[in-house]
Amino acid sequence: MKKIKTLHLPSQGRIIVISDIHGELDLFTDLLKKVHFSCEDTLIINGDLCEKGRNSKGVLKFIMDLSKRNENVHITEGNCDTVVEDLLAENPKLMNYIRSRKHSILKEWLDEIGFDMNDGTTVKEVKEILTHHFSEQINWLMELSTVIDTEDYIFVHAGLEDKADWRETDRIAAITMPSFLEKSHGSGKYVIVGHWPVVNYTSDIPSNNPIVDKEKKIISIDGGNVIKSSGQLNAFIIHRAESGDTFSHVHTDHLSTCQVMKNFHSVAMKGSISYPHYKLVPIQSSEHFTLSKQADSEDQLYVKNEYLHQSEDGTFWAKTDLSCAQISVKKGEVVSVVDNTCAGYNLIKKNGKEGWIPKDVLSPMKERTLTHAG
Ligand SMILES: [Mn+2]
Image 1 (tube, rainbow, N blue to C red):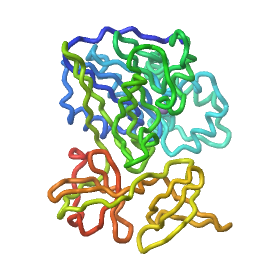
Image 2: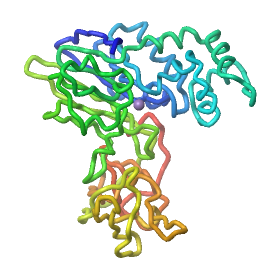
Image 3: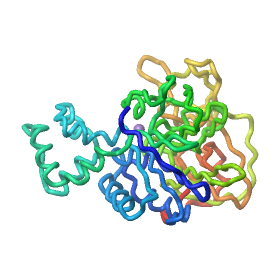
C-alpha cells in the first residue's frame, strides 16, 4: 500500500474521528457544532465523504475548504470516494452506475453544469466534461491517503490485513473489507475504522454507537448513516492525556424526537435481524409480535407483525433490518422515533440503542429542527 501518511498527534486535547458522512452535509455540520469543534481539536475524516446521501459535492467542498484553512484536519479515502478513479480510468461500468444511482457526486456535478446524459453518452465524454470543470476536486480526492499512521492509532476506512507488516495490506482491501471487527491485525496500535455499520455486530439490543474492542485493538465507528433507517453519524472522540487516553462519542441523525410520558420496563424481548439473515419461521403469533425462529441461526425473536412478510411460496421473511428488542424508558426522557406507523408500539432509539415501546408511553409527536437531532 503506497498512500500512508505519518502523523504526530498532540499528546493533549481531542482527536475527533468521523467516518461515512456519505453526502449528508447537514448532519456533518450539526455534528461539528454538537461537539463544539474548534481549532484546538484534531479532526480525522475516515473515508466515504461522498455517495449515497443528498449533497456529496457540498460535503466535499466543505471539507476541502476546512482542510485548507486548518492544518489539524486530515482525511483518508473510502471505497465510495474512488468513484473519481473509475471516472479517470474510463471504467465503462460507471455509466450504468450513474444512471441507476439516486445520488452520486458525478450526477450532482453534471447537474451543476447542466449536462444532460442520453443513451449514447460515453464514459469518455463524462470524464472530459467533469475533468474540465472539477479538476481541483477530482485531484484532491485522488490524492487522499489510504491510511493515517500515528504513534498510538491507525486510521483506515475499512481495515488492515493480518500480515507481519500491516503496511503490506492491499489498498483495495483496506478500503473495502467487510466486518473488520470479526478479524484481527498485528499492528499493536488501535485501528479505527468506519465502513461497516456497527449495528451489524450487535446482537442483544441493536446499537449504532461506536464499539471499542480492547482485546483486538479495533475501534469501529460507522453508525450506519444513510445506509440504515435508524442510522446515525457518529463522532468518536479521543481525549488525549498523560494519564492515558479516554474515549467518548456523540451523534446526529435525521430522526424526530419525542418525550417519554410514563415509565416502561421492557420484558425479555431482545435481539435483532440484520441483512442477509431475513428468513424466518413463525412459531406463535400474537396481536403485535410474532415469535419466530431465524432460519440461519435458530435464534428465537419477537418480530413486529408489520415487518413480517410472506412470499408467494409461503416462506416468511423480515422486510428489512430490524430490532426485535424492547427497551426500558423513564418518564421525562427524550428519545428518537424510528417508526411510529405500526399498531400498538413505536420503534425508538435511546442513546443510540433501538427497541420497541408501547405507543401510549410517548407524548404526541411534534416537529423539531435538525439542529437538535440525536
Ligand atoms: Mn465504505
